[in-house]
Length: 159
Image 1 (tube, rainbow, N blue to C red):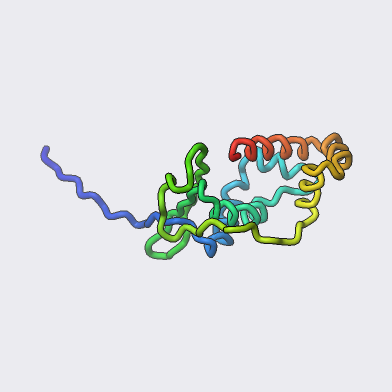
Image 2 (image 1 turned 60 degrees about the vertical axis):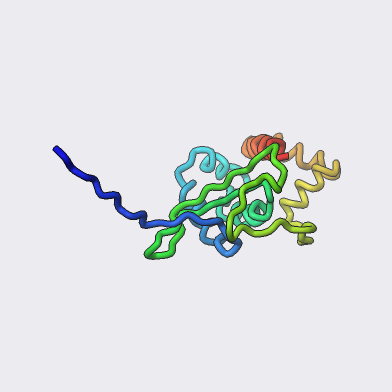
């Protein structure tokens, strides 16, 4: 049987994630993690975990990070983002990283923004101010303890 299989053309494109994609990716991520057990567990804490908000707050800085590469899969017909993947690399100098057309450039100096209450709490803990308050909250809310551990582990890995 001599059959030739015709390769169909892809109906999608791969491209660098751009800052303008962040809101769509935030919703896409939130939708994708609705049934994720760890995300559901985080929602049991005193303050529900908002994956969309977390993405909106964290993704822009990752896009500017020279050691992070984020790509999106885009439907050619609709232009909708079908998926996204973000990699963080360790042990590479910025000039050794792959170049992607459309990737936001690294920020020369950090943007100055007003800290929201959660950021203020984290900064206070880092500075040693309010550490007791944070420790007390973590003692009474096991979900806060989980988030502190998983977040600290990820941050340590990315340094």
